[in-house]
Amino acid sequence: MNNVIVVGSGPAGISVATGLLERGCKVTLLDAGNTLEIEKQNVLHEIQKNNLDLSFLKSTAYAKKKLKLPYGSNFIYDDVKDYFSWKTQNCYLPHSFAQGGLSNAWGGVLSEFSEKELSNWPESCRNLSTYYPKIISLFEKYYTSDSSNFLSTQACYLKDRWSKNRSHLENDGFYFRPATLGVNFNHCRLCGSCQHGCPYELIYHTSIYLALLKLNKNFDYVNGVVVENFFENNKDIEILVKHIKDKRSFRMKTDRLFIASGSGLSSLLYLRSLNEIGKKLVLKDSQHFILPCLLDKRFKNVKDDNLHTLCQLEMSLTQENISRYPIHLQFYTYMDLYKIELKNKLKWSYFLLKPLLKSLVERLIIIQGYLDSRESNYLTIQYKCNNQFEIKANKSRSVMHTINCISRYLKQNKNNLAFNPLLFLSSKSLVGQANHVGGSLPMSDDPKGDEVNIWGTPNHFKRVHFVDGSILPSIPAGPITLTIMANAYRIGKEAPL
Image (cartoon, rainbow, N blue to C red; front, side, top):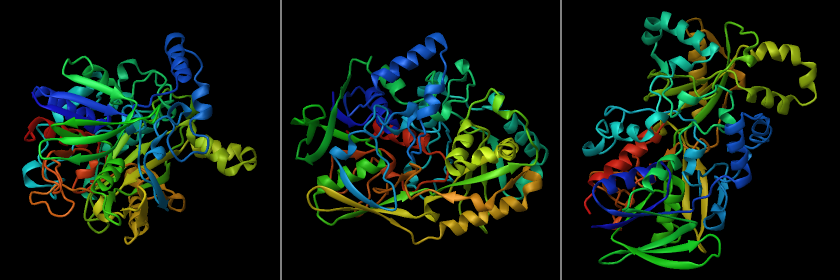
């Protein structure tokens, strides 16, 4: 029986562990494992038990923070800077020490990519169609392939209008569908609190499946530890590990090491283990942007609707005059965050403009859009002395020009789309800020430099496998979690041991 170590309990970690366990491996999963504060857990249990008021969630979760803070807690991001120190310049490096990683803060949208959409992947692993069903089975009741039955009033209106105009829209490059979501709608109360953290814990995060893995006799979960470095010998891998509580370091040995720390931290761990001062990696980003729009119809008292506030509808735009690759658009209808943001921006004038703003909010929807990484800017990560890293955004591409072209094209089609984009309010996120990053150690059939083979193994190692988003050759526009999980499962299930 092979003894292997997996690092990280996020989507890639639990997926590669599943594949390894199915082969009869003995798997030890090392994890920092931060969880929600016990006081907040107790409040959530009281809400679920007694249907208490949800206002405590809504008053704290978005207190002018740019990071998503479920239940108003910073547990997802805590402690990381104590072990990995970096300076950024006008960019963001996604990171998490939480149990379940960044799945605690994701938007729940799921998407499968075809072999054609992954055309720049190695030919031997670009077809993930046999692995997606396995990953979907891990979601169990948390997988909703078609959310049509749970659309908001505004989303139903859009879907109906688009369905009537389908032929015109498709001729113009628009393809739409209700969102596929990692949500258990069987018990959803449509309370509208999704963006603050689901009070009933119905949005999937990988801690849910981790609890099932712990029941396997060949699986050992060790939390409260951080992998700081690793070294390969002729026969095994030696790992330097540190306890979070007492900062005590110790060493472990394993036959194989599977690293699933998330694209950002996996990149830092790779550079630290090579220990080459000045060495750089490029971390690709799928550029994220936000475009507010006004529906061509007002929906009175929309704030009283029973609804979820995750993505309602998805749209793919293929228009080669704008981008060589498909553009992904996610549509969000009314949520209380609109009012919170307006209050923060308008301050005292909010109350003077309240009647006008009420009418505005009853027509307001938000598009969150994504570009393919091949038409986005990227991060450069450099290893400095004393375990320091410097991270910069490379802004060689004019992504705002592309975003403006998308906005104008939507405006040209406003009659068929049933909404009018507010071009002057469009904005783009910092490079890396939307967490759709990867490709610092891209897979290749013939790996060179810092590329990895199709099993995630870099040239410099034989027993180490990177299995998260860091090994994607590019980042397609759209939700990438399911693809990261399917690829990690493939490696766990089939990689030579």
